[in-house]
Image (cartoon, rainbow, N blue to C red; front, side, top):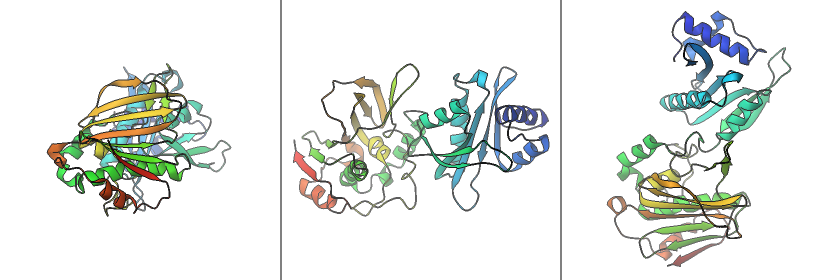
Length: 335
């Protein structure tokens, strides 16, 4: 619930000060924050169980800070997820190109929650007079809060003609770029691109496989690269330019404008595959037999209603890929 009125100010302050006793705030200080930040309180019935802060960009950058705090006795019950979702939605409204959070270093559950949802530590600092550091953590490439952002997918599809510029060739370059990202990190030394008779395109690499995380019950979640925005590229004015001269938008654009996509992911801790149709997952994440190797395979069939039915030639793909700043060998095959 947005903080509006004295009662909500007091509830927000009490939760904040209980969780961060090293930096307590007065009522007047909270009122001042309401004027410049977006503050929320989470309730269970009439009991305040959490609070959040969304700090708008400071004018120098488009970074928005989203902080969710839950009282210890109410953690692991979904309240943190709810506050983060609201905070990330507000960050979108504010035009954020980067999202950060701040957590007291001794809040081990909070740090774990942030790491599990895609935040990585970028800075530690200690306030004057304190001894316990705060951690600044930045959302890396994708939010792990959900495997699917349906509104993001729908927004791409509403402007399909704009996002489809460059056709299937550009879509293939978007996918190949991810494999080459892995190569730059030293985890991939070979990429294979296959044009299939059914009009689909496969991009395979022998890297470490897409990241996977497990919840407390051991249920896996693959990094949601297919149906959530890549914060580095989507609608980012200075995102990297691909060899065809068009900027990267991310894997989710390829997925949203494909009739179907199959994402097969092989890691040392297991292998899984997920099918998507028109940008959204169809069926559950399915475990597949280990092959003795690791890597990622993305096979996508471009939507004929968007891209038409013409495939790029192997020669066109090879020529375009020669423009990548990479030395990793790429094989081009026809099935």
